[in-house]
Image 1 (cartoon, rainbow, N blue to C red):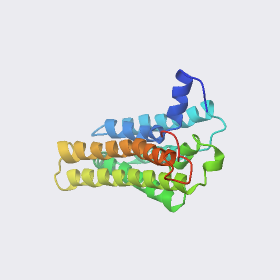
Image 2 (spheres, rainbow, N blue to C red):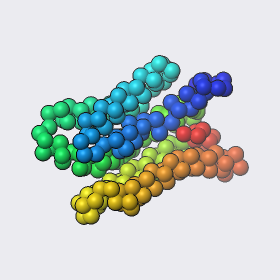
Image 3 (tube, helix red, strand yellow):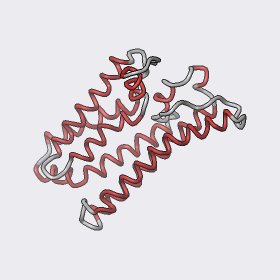
Image 4 (cartoon, rainbow, N blue to C red):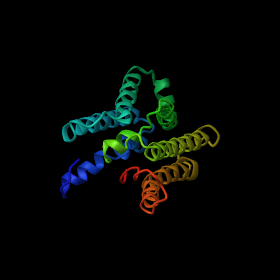
Length: 216
């Protein structure tokens, strides 16, 4: 990990954050819409590939991240599907693209937990000595953070589905935007708050294990 200050340190911090792996999905959510499915997929796929390449260039010895590999695979598949889809299928994809993306993230989050490798784990391991990787506190913290992200994606998927299927208004200010954004903001804040809380408890002597990680 880069130890100096300046841009190098900021780049290292960004590469150590799972938020970077979510960037292609954020781009997709912002861009996709009627007549913009291919554009949204293309930009997201380009971003996903750029994120993977950035990790290989700036951190050549770092581990591969499940989330980032899934980014490339998901948007690569969507690019092929979009290129082959009929006009009717493309309209369907444009309508439900948000729910498809959020449900895919739910599968990634809870699937990684089922495989005993929460998607936040590789990022957290970049920030702590190898001796702490198997500590119960460290692992429990990453399971919990990944679970919170999975719950946030599920809330966003349900809200978006309600807006599309029940309200027939994907741009509804509450279900189409506020609820979904709020769920992600809660997950982001929890990702910052919870490790700090565990570190504080460890420093106070309330936990036998070392702090779980630095700021994700």
